[in-house]
Image 1 (cartoon, helix red, strand yellow):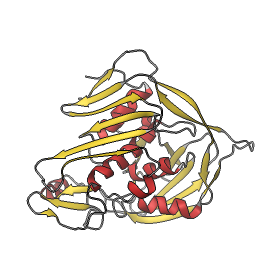
Image 2 (image 1 turned 90 degrees about the vertical axis):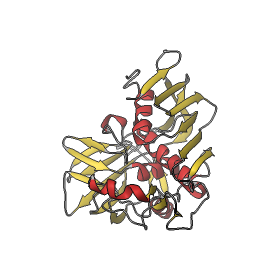
Image 3 (image 1 turned 135 degrees about the vertical axis):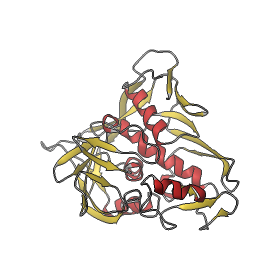
Image 4 (image 1 turned 60 degrees about the vertical axis):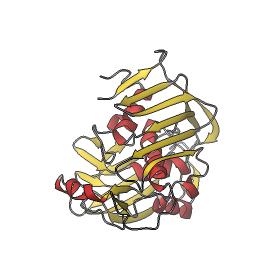
Length: 313
């Protein structure tokens, strides 16, 4: 169980302030079709412009709306982030949400269809990165989002007021007040020397070139165990970079020497975007430092910032 520390215990931890920008949405609809990483099923995803102030939301089962909000995040989430409401769920949302947050798509309708299931769907994995989504967004472009009354809305951002930390064993995420967004992420895989210990730091304007194309990764010797749990049915050497404990990378080349660590930053951005509400920015204006974290700790961090849980454990 994670322990959440609010150092000064003086909520709220965040204040919403103007970014001096207007909320945006995608300029036109677009569709992508691909295979889900865990289910192995094929899904069609349609992204459409949405009105200012509604934020990002999924439509599943034809009409059920699931907002991309921390209130809908399922616990625990060890290998992906899942949102659920009214018996419907959408799995592996982190790469798409990361792309939307980083490219400034504040409001968006995301409709997912599957020929095999109506109540549980999954965002396609593609090559294991967010590149497919970023390129699609670049192709259609963005436009200012307007309300049903034809008005634009100011975009707000969450500013961190006090230091905060969530921790489980030797894994942690800490955040400190800072004048801009900044992320420092560390991973450590001593059992796989080809990965080892890595750190990557980003201030996010370089997302498209330095983060979006970094792919998810796995340890080859753990694949069969994960499949025995009913996971990664759609996984392959085309959807992830695979590392053997003693054989190194089995499907090189890497896109970056520290690609695994960069992918963790990609995941963090997608998960923390669940803090957004009403078309606001999700990533807090803060310096976030994460070490050996994952989806469960990412979402626990967001719950802490949102005030859903101030102390757990």
